Image (tube, rainbow, N blue to C red):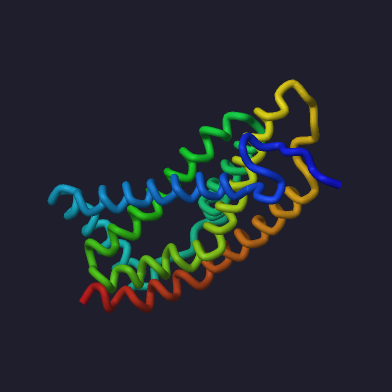
Length: 206
């Protein structure tokens, strides 16, 4: 049975592609802004960032880099995907999802670029351990939820005035997959990342 077109401009066979393009474009835009800001910091800002990162790595080298407490870890891991999922229940997601994607890309790229600016190529290795390993699962989950929510927000405009179930079975299944991926990411950040950072901190501080 052919499904009705529920978006603004896409067809059933291409549903989600424009939402992915929008989400990825704003994520990339935020990432470019983050890199630009990190590499354009004043000397005072650069020195302050270097002092902060040195302190972080010294703590890690001394074995004092403990895993965050559970509430903090849950908040850090789930705040972005939860915000993306929540925006899918309102037409405000049409504007909120691009802004959220831009912010996510900005903070991620700024952190990576700060390590690269301070420690060069070696800093990229630490950034990979600290952000890349958990992000390998959490960022795709964020993208999936963002695309789904943006598509849903656009559909709400298309069916304005009609009452329909906002969450379909497929959407719930995708949310479940994303929650599982984020939980695995959380475990990696809790148990694997501190070990890797502690092991590589000494090389950077030499």
